[in-house]
Length: 163
Image 1 (cartoon, rainbow, N blue to C red):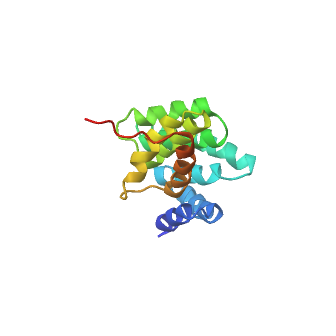
Image 2: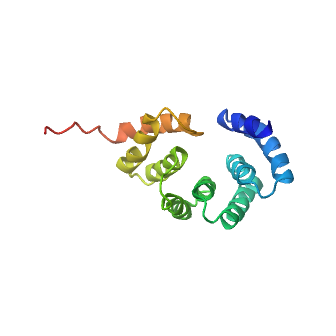
């Protein structure tokens, strides 16, 4: 099915291939959280400023349409981040997190903002638990693995204190 193919392409970072499938899904189901959300993600990865702008517009529509969805706010936070709007991104991600459990991808998004702000201990606090779990959907797992290596260079690992 197209949803599975689109997700596979997103995991493989084939944003152009995923975009084609997701555009068709969005056209067929303009009220689908999956189609809109993942289309936002692939558009945000583009170097084309028009696509980045559209990802933000779709992200705004997504959070309006799915105002109680942590995933919607997480995606919107990421597209804002990808456009360099860190304060707004952090606010959207905080809205996502306030709903309870933070997804692995959301943890990665928070870690990217923390890293960019030189808050390396915070970045590590988001990345470590997300990467320690081998289960569950985590589109940005490979990116998180690369980031934690960079974060580890900035934050010395604390030795467990004696009990």
